[in-house]
Length: 582
Image (cartoon, rainbow, N blue to C red; front, side, top):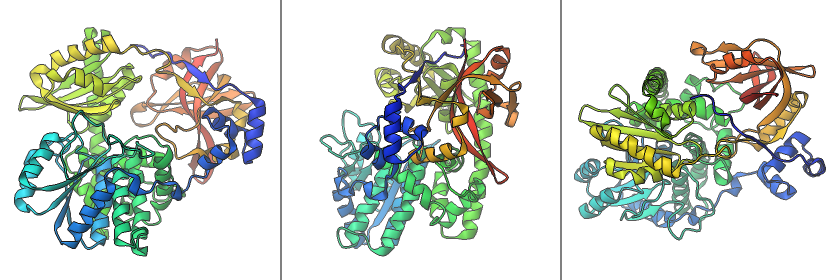
């Protein structure tokens, strides 16, 4: 399985249009090129995108179900009933749970939270937990966060027991909706909500906002609750980046504003987390700081079965306890990385040892020694490594297996699992990522069934894996001032990637070098017409040998970044792909 040659696509260079947009907006030609490449040649549209503000968020009343849900929560608060938030164990669920808990605490509510253990209970609502919560307090109000929209059986049980339940979620809707007291979801049938891509924490934030409105004057929250909502945007930003939802429209506003508030009005736990993640001293936080430093530490707790403590970390007001919990999740994150590296090695070995699997368009790998909490991250890396949708399954002693899958090249993962459901005990997710449970004895049949479905329905073209490039540039154009200005397009993430450029006919200024832990990353220096720059490719040590064999010039595709080291700022290139110039 060699490196797949990716097609590079460019937006046509239109000098007159670049000059017009650059002049109208008073921005550099480089920024104007990117705006045009992304469909924003209209000056007013581009201005609205560049200057997105908190006031651009949609009124929470527009979100399907949120008004009824807020009324039910306020009624429970007035009746002094216990309110239990049932959250998912990933970053999105943990931050969403923290937002609602904070909100209801400040409102004087009798509130607690329940986070299922990933290994013992699995994803989402479960019947055992619902029975237990009902037995403890049958009068409580149960509010789900980031889960429940597929929990038809569990909602029926709650209804039968007389347990009032509100479901807030954003995941794919199944053929049948649960019969809960209220459903809050941006894409409910008949919904006209302007933006359907909120994450679970975003939905929880909208519900908290609606609650605050009701406890204020009906339209505006009290000054104290407005201050809470400002801090809650920071938590929603963490959930939004971590859940890899499109960073457009509302999501982009949430992350943009949340990044600004994270440090300024953070809780003691969040401040401690920023310190152990080594981002507390940064002048400005970026979405990458969430994605690579903050979120993995929160996620490590959930992946290793301790998500409740991650919620406690984000909500505690005890500075000493915050420091303890932050150090603990930092250690868990180190453990997680060690486990992931081992599983990745084993997965690669399994593919190499089973040549027949390499003929499939999908990969299904299973092992008794894998941790169910971290296989999703590894599945993503295996999918990248072998250029195909991948499902990793952790086999358990009880004869079942828990699997996590990641898509590749537009493969409809949820549809594929639906087609293979006869081999599965349960499954859920969406087109890009999914989870499942099956009998260990069904793994081989499931592998064959998935490969057969993919053989019939999955025909990736070069367009499916193409690299979209905003503009061809000279390295001399990618200077500190221009790259700094490009940040106005951010925050960057899914559906709003950092600007990607191409430079042609560059030369290696020195032989490629390996860097980082275990020599996993690649560093090169490239030269073009007298300009020399450093480029880094993360996790691409395998390119070093190929690059060393190229005798002539190269074309490179990259995203420019600013490296701040010892008080000096330099532009560095994040290498995405390369080709011999010939």
